[in-house]
Image 1 (cartoon, rainbow, N blue to C red):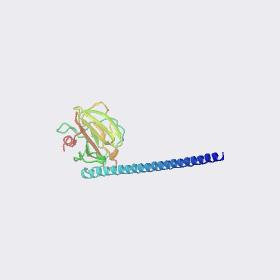
Image 2 (image 1 turned 135 degrees about the vertical axis):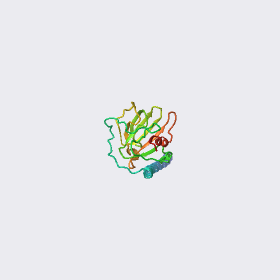
Image 3 (image 1 turned 30 degrees about the vertical axis):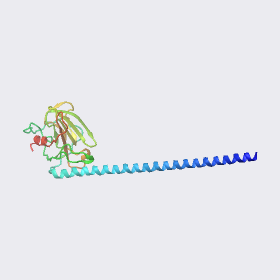
Image 4 (image 1 turned 120 degrees about the horizontal axis):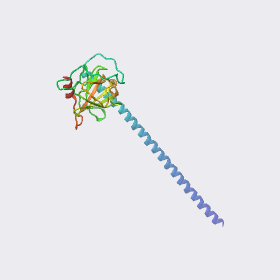
Length: 234
């Protein structure tokens, strides 16, 4: 009986030792998994921080590009009072007549611009418009007869207007300082003031200008500089 009890005790001791080894092994595995998870989280946070830093650097580079473009293309002009972003009492038709092409200059006042269509931008983008520089608050005009299809704002473009000409061509005006009271969805005449030159959106900190795009019916965005030159007689 004593021999039997002693044998059982030895087996129990062996089992307890095996259980202890298993528990220690599992504890080590849990610690290793926790350390791996912590290391992975730290690596992910480091990558996210680097991405945020690169995004900030790219935004600064884009703003610097805009400032350099402005310095090369913008002519000095007196600064007009900044209008309110809210609509003015009524839409006003421009005093200017259409150019020989039958189009009205998108900026109803002294303006300067150069062809920067396709110029590189941050994030692998390219410039899809022409930046038309003018004094802050200079009226922005409908380039032809047509309809304002959308008028809103975004972080990138600031205050913007989508305008569809009677011929089906779509025009895009952005970085505006404010809107006129020209109706959205209603037919308006070419030359009608629809907004005001500004530098809202990601153009903040650059000289006031209108980013202007042209997209003919059934086509994507094209280089708008020739259209702007015809419309402005330049």
